[in-house]
Amino acid sequence: MNNKPCEVCNGKGLVQVRDIEKQTQTVKACPACQPTKKPPLGLMPEKIWKEKRLQSIKAAIDRFLAAFQPVPPEWIDEYNRLNKEVHNQ
Ligand SMILES: [Zn+2]
Image 1 (tube, rainbow, N blue to C red):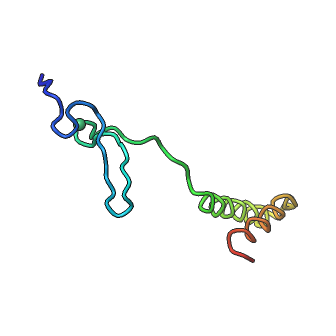
Image 2: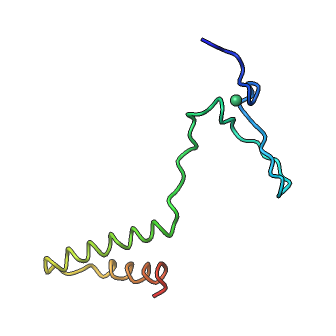
Image 3: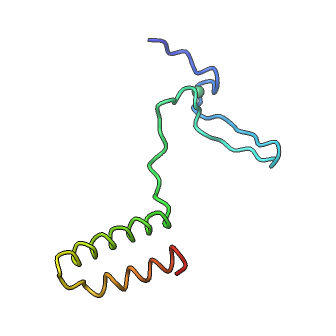
């Protein structure tokens, strides 16, 4: 087992990142000694989520129409609302 400290961060686990253009300096986890450490899972962008929801509603409405079942009015309301938000219609 080799316990020699990381050459990039000198074992601190953090490195400083300079942005010359913006003249900023931030600290981030050293990529050299934490190559497998992934950032936590983020969040799906709201617009994408709404597009997916729109597709789900549309598919559900299509299934109910195909089975000649009454479509719940709240589905249509949500569809129209999201469609307006996502597609400006
Ligand atoms: Zn390191």
